[in-house]
Amino acid sequence: MEKQHITETSMTLAQQWENSGFLENDLLLLEHMNEVPFPKEPRRMNFILIALCTAGQVSYRMDMQEQVVTPGDLMIVSERHVIDNYNASPDLDGLCFIVSMKFFYEIIQNISDMSALFLFSRQHPVLHLKDRDQQVFQDYYKLIRSKIQGNDNHFRKDLIRTLLLAMFYDLTNVIYHFQQLTNERQSRADVIFNAFIKLVEENCRHERRVGWYAKQMGITAKYLSETIKHVSQRTPNQWIDNYVTLELRVILKNTTKSIKQITEEMNFPNQSFLGKYFK
Image 1 (cartoon, one colour):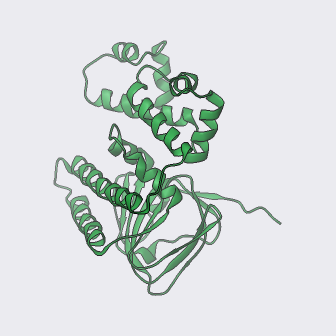
Image 2 (image 1 turned 120 degrees about the vertical axis):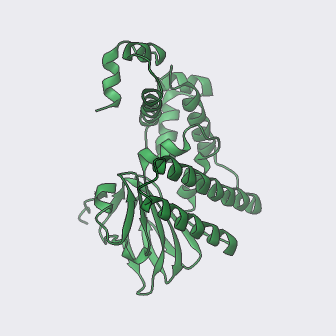
């Protein structure tokens, strides 16, 4: 059998889709789900897609698992998942958010339990929402879209970031109640991932060695690396680098400290190490 080539879909490419409203290279909103031009061939997502189906039906394959979305279903596709075999009914409709990974992690940085949304979507990429939760999602969509169009607001991006965080909290609350209702427990791998992310959030300013994190968790570096890669499709080093980059952006945006002072604060051997995070 001939191996299919997997291409990637980026935010830049997604911005070319019709009838979209977007915020720089960070956020894209689509009024009609049927206008998302998913291809038949395998394609890896470089962003997070969250969509609510309001009419019709769509089926697709995600990481070789068949999925079906019907009215009232929330569809979540996170980074690095491979989508193919996409088929939509003629009457498909719905609302769609596409969030860059950089913006997503800026939003959830230092927010406890927000990784639950990421983990849940891995096991449950499609979830049916109650009527009131569907209405909440639609209200967020309308409000955020109106703020995207408000170019005269000096705090536009910060406002949109805050609204998205509120929406993520509401979605995570839906997930929490679903897990309580079904008595669904986290796997050991998920527990390890959550513990790792919490440690990285608390210690990335000073510790960037995978071995150090593994030691704090009482497991081997090899087991930690294999588990994190299995759960998130990213290596521990990629997660650590991501949080260090976000931390540096926050520091540079909100401080008058010199590069030398920041280098010392972040426990870098010398200033040249900063360049690794801003290529």
